[in-house]
Length: 130
Length: 295
Image (cartoon, each protein chain N blue to C red):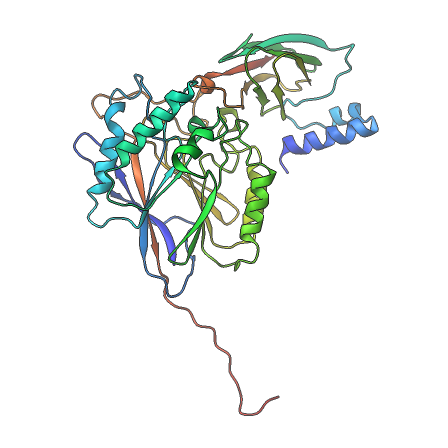
């Protein structure tokens, strides 16, 4: 099991048993997804459309719980941040919220992982965590 | 029978030539007594319909590859195209037109036994509908001289899933096979996580590898990443092929997976097709000694 999948499994278990704060402490060294409380988290709206995200450079603070709020305009785009161990399908007509808490400073890529057309390979972005 | 990558044919302005490559680790011991040697050719990622600066000769590259294969002194037993036959388009009619043009260009191939499979450019926008109309099934098996070949479709789902139905089909196909049977798998995307941030992965590829893992002689050939690359997952070897349109950067070597620029001084550099030669291994013998009386 990879670190990311181990983390995802732990989070699923944590959701069941309310152990999320403990899981944050037990996180992998790299920045990883977490489950901030909805009231505490800063929400960052992101628009996905062929073939880019707006914004595509997102600045975060280490340890800050945020919720990425995606709106897809034209396709079931994907959102995949491999270093965070999170991904989601972004269905048009609804807001898809993805909570993350980066625990490590650095630059981390994310991408559309649902093939969406000729510009799909360029549909990506970066988190810059300070 | 052993299977190895005997050589690569490199396309070049001067006409190219065969480049010998040594046997690959993990490919040995695909034993199959009594079978004869044979070889096949892998062609991949022709992206017919592409127009751009990364290959200003795109209108001629596929035809050049066909000519190179036809020029082989000994023709292969069969050819496999491991996906992205065409460049994607939103227009369903244009997609079919490109596929028809592709078929016209490869029609002069001397070898008539050709196995096609889709890439995401062919199949992801319509879940393989046009491909199936023009080429047939997107996943299937065939046997050749004692070797079992499995074509896995990891592109008709735009999310790069093989899917539970196809995994069930794979499980059923494998069940009952000799654990030492030589098995070759063709896919478009890598089954393993090569560079997930470049979308060089199959979302549920680990499930397919888990099904293949009990079999001791499995080799995977794939495309998608437009370059030669070799990787082991346990005892299973995975080999990607060069493309027939433009090369891509080495896995994870730069921020973006942008194509390597066309070099006018060395046109077609980094493009090519692959020969894979399957060799019969010397017979091995198991011996048991019997006395004259039963014990």
